[in-house]
Image (cartoon, rainbow, N blue to C red; front, side, top):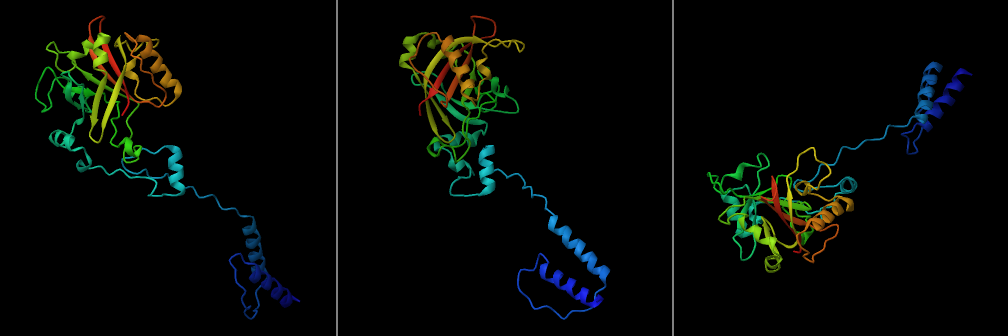
Amino acid sequence: MGNTTNRYFLGVVKLNLPFRVERVELAPLVFVPAFIITIYLIAFIASLSYKPEPVVSQPVKKPSGIKVSNTAAAQLETKMDEDDILFSQKTPEDMLPKMRSYYEQNNDCVGWLKVDDMVIDYPVMQTPENEDYYLDRNFEGNPDQAGCLIMDTDSVVGDGTAEFDYKDGTKPSTNLIIHGHNMRNGSMFGDLDKYRKQDFERSHNIIRFCSLYEEREYEIISVFLSQVYMAKQTDVFKYYKFFEANTPEEFDDFYKNIKKLQLYDTGVTAEFGDEFITLSVCAYHVENGRLVVVGKRIK
């Protein structure tokens, strides 16, 4: 009786082990003590109710030089298709030829600003570690009270191109803010005062900014007077704090305010998704006053 029971239980165990996926010929049965069979059965039954813990994947490593949203990262985690994503591996050779030489002379240079028929025709510098570095230094880094045109450190110039929808690099922020001195001789941003008159704006309504990788154009949408407010003042429009419109509400707040403050109607409108460039210079109508010229990107 004992041998018969052992042979029956052993046959069950051999035929139902989870890793058995093929039919195999049973080996000759040998005597196995009942307590060993009992242990095997308990282990087998326990295995039937075992549910392995789900495997948690590691975060996807984002490709160098390209911003990946949470949604895009999830898609990449499922399938990485190099035909759909252009990885940014920018080198000086990818730069516009006319910008490459300036960058090679000084890699703080992030672009060039020009307005036709004005003295505004200068390189634009950006130093994230010290925004004021070029406040009183020229392109070569030598002392100069006129300084340079300075790209705000919170502005993202972008190292891609609109031609490829910036999949070949980083997209610029919604608003680029450039600061410059109001020099008495008219250099740097000393000429911006001319935009107080609409007749001048009508004949000088295009701002040209060339990044290291592409040429852009902006049409002036608003000219207004403002000031640098105290940090504790929260019920005022601080144009110099606007860099990115992630929602229509953020865009509307900026757009409605620059239109409300405008010295005259330029006739130019904008909508959520548009990009802007903001030129900011000292003005003297109030303490810490500013004259601001805003352009909407058209190219």
